[in-house]
Image 1 (tube, helix red, strand yellow):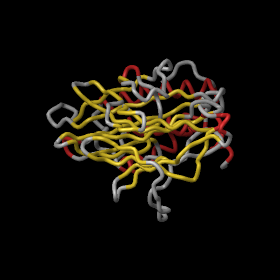
Image 2 (tube, rainbow, N blue to C red):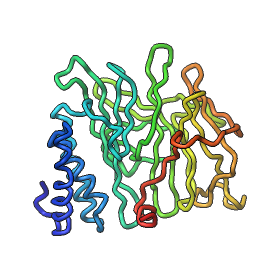
Image 3 (cartoon, one colour):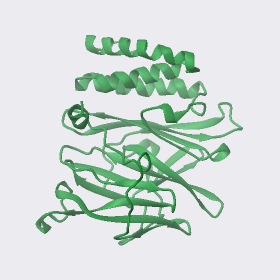
Length: 299
């Protein structure tokens, strides 16, 4: 536990721990109950210092939970967090991320990636993600390691095959700052305990790239979602209302047209101006950003 935290933070943690106790009767372990309590406290924290303190605590608590061998035994669908669980058996991968929004509307991120490894003592290997503030998130041709991770909340994903090789594709959101938001699509590679984000699997208008990035005004929401049948990744077409603001994402918003990425021969291929049907209730629900401003407005 933290030695130097405010009285408000102590109250938040105590309240959250009490709320988490019933989870233990549902086969929830104490390590995971403490994690959920810290997440609940983070959502309630009213000042930046408390949020950052809880962020640091979460990083330590997740180490305890991971080393206790619990990451592959959780029903992640019951967690109201940014978690992507793909594949089965030896091909299973879980990606878990969280964010802390600072007073200046910039973000700090934490997370981990776990991969099934039946031969290991835990039954999986896992790697913590370290947010590097120097990484350029708009770079669609860079590869980012787990120890120099660009940050972001991964909220959905899909597993495809390149011949017999599993390919894990993730959808992400970043709160950026008070002017812009970002969403992007990229793949994740896991080898020998190393995690790498971004591989050349995106055939875009400007050539083969390692991710597709969307940047747009903070005041709007942009679609980026997966359609399962037929498999494709749907996204809003973005443009500024005034051509004079071309190249300035803070003025970009949806044009009411849609683009897509379709999977073929081991790559995602960009298609412009495609037809999209409105999703049925409960299907393809659009991801809403978790910024503090929107949460407070919706209370």
